[in-house]
Image (cartoon, rainbow, N blue to C red; front, side):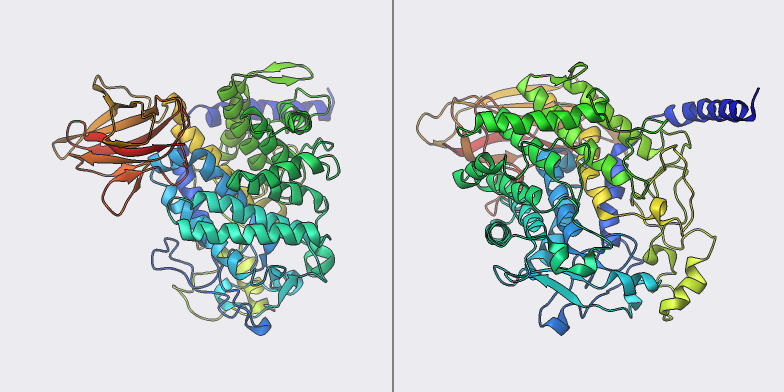
Amino acid sequence: MSNFIKIEQIALFLLLAIAPLALSSGHDYGQALSKSILFFEAQRSGYLPGNQRVRWRGNSGLLDGKASGVDLVGGYYDAGDNVKFGLPMAFTVTMMSWSILEYGSQMASSGELGHAMDAVKWGTDYLIKAHPQPHVLYGEVGDGNTDHYCWQRPEDMTTSRSAYRIDENNPGSDLAGETAAAMAAASVVFRRANPAYSRELLNHAHQLFDFADKYRGKYDSSISVAQKYYRSVSGYADEILWAAAWLYKATNEQYYLDYLGENGDALGGTGWAMTEFGWDVKYAGVQTLVAMFLMGGKSGGHAPVFGKYQEKAEMFMCSCMGKANHNVQRTPGGLIFRQRWNNLQFVTSASFLLTVYSDHLAAARKDLQCASGSVAPSELLAFAKSQVDYILGDNPRATSYMVGYGNHYPQQVHHRGSSIVSVKVDPSFVSCRGGYATWFVRKASDPNLLTGAIVGGPDAYDNFADQRDNYEQTEPATYNNAPLLGVLARLHGGHVANNQLLPVEIPLHKRVAVQPKHVAPYADPIEIDQKATTSWVSNGRTYYRYVARVTNKSRRTIKNFNLTISKLYGPLWGLTKTPGGSYGFPAWVSSLPADKSIEFVYIHSAPFADVSISNYMLA
């Protein structure tokens, strides 16, 4: 027997011996969601707020933009360095927003919606500053070359903080398009909770789309210092379509729907069948959004073209599932593998698209048609879950690639802030090269836990080296985490329409049909259905968790409503409280179509609260 065969058999034995240990128990997706959102607080630049939970961080980058006469304080550091790169930051905001729009109710039920919205707003507050004029957008603060020469905490930075911009003479359609998408997506997130802010974001989105479309060019030709770090390989056509899709989702304006229909062929939306989705290549995301428009009956006369978008979206899904003519590569442990450096960014983004598309296919009562056969929506979700489970520890190494989750996770993260003692513990200045000499070369665990960070992950053979200088595998990034928020929320909370918030049922039930006091014409009853899903005893008192479903039983869309809730003695999630004390639609819902429902959750140690409709309006 050859040595090669012996080694291969030993490796197989180890794989089979370790894997059952990793796969034997389920995951706490709620905990993973909380930690994943927390990571964004560690990446904050600027003046940290009073409710900052990552206490080892301090204020940083307080003079950003000053030399250029603009305030660019704030925003996010993209990864383990101290540069603010606009393209991946905007993509991060877009994907966090999309996660909330699809799975905000699940986030609310787990108490994380507010934190997720705070994370989006930290990004959009900065993007607003970076867009001081309609056709001016700052796309980078700091210089990757000088920054990478130093190993310093953000609080100690001595590197260049030059600001780089695009404008009419130095265009960047990809950067402007992605930022427009981020603003548009976030405008929907804040539509109910902060209408004025939502309108401000939408105004920026309109201007940035106009800028991207009229003054075309690649941003890294104008901001050449970005080429080594975030080169726009795919060009700008995908970002222009991406922005149009998000503006249509935010506004329902025919102009953007027509733009997608009339430019799909010319800009590649109907032609490119991709096997990746991320901060550079947006085609699969555009195609998925347009396919969702089509399934929702919103093609606006462009059904043939939108059908071609959908065909390419489904080719992406099929390739991830291993059921296309050209499939995505996987590791022996089953992980999607695209590239050696920071591969998990593609895993989380693909998992998000699979999860979202699974739910929309299920709602449309359709299966995915692949080259090797039909795929049920549940299979898409199951595969996405398998990718998330791999990240959380169900893999040949039994290693969690989310820092701080599980019993075994990376200890030497390639991250300046986490690898150097906190300025709160030792305020002594850490010099540019001194940081390398003292902290970078340490073999000990990081002094600060970078909770929730998704690192680059293993190689094509499931191997991983937990070493600080192994930046390809141990460096985290905001765009690794952003798509994962939605998937974790979905896996933790379940699909609201299927009432999977909690699996436990208690024999308590109450159903009432309410005729509103003040209604618009054709006012049909609204049905409110309440049930208790679990209970527990604390300090001798029994607490109940109730789920209430509000269903539109009319044949028209409800544009807004007000609920009156009395005899409520505990917290409530999933509705927006109005100044008058009543409750309205949650922040992520703008209307309630016929036969559709929304749900909210409350907890108290009493029987059902009294819930009634005080008024509503029909479209």
